[in-house]
Image (cartoon, rainbow, N blue to C red):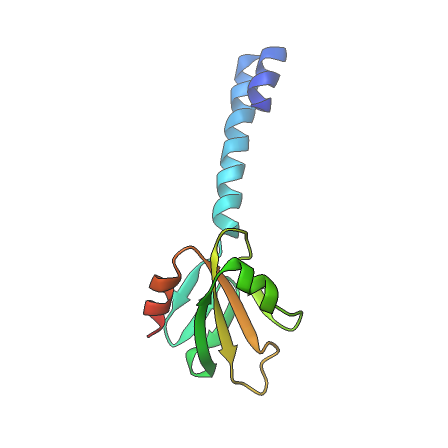
Length: 115
């Protein structure tokens, strides 16, 4: 929008160029910062990876349960209001976090991919 306004103030070509640049930058940042979740022999969420064999227990919880149970010693990925979470209990001596909370809009499908 600012690019089009600048176009009216200066020239239409500059305004369209600025609008295209802004749209391209927005799309790039959106794709870059989306957390990708993959499950194979390890659970990978964005840059974080956890071997499946270290996951002791997994359960789906809603946002209110998440707010009541999360502590500073937990890893929280994808925290937003209005979504559900999967809570992963981790059994590993050398792991820095004892629980992971991963936000998801599809907790049942996510749980099914882990089994």
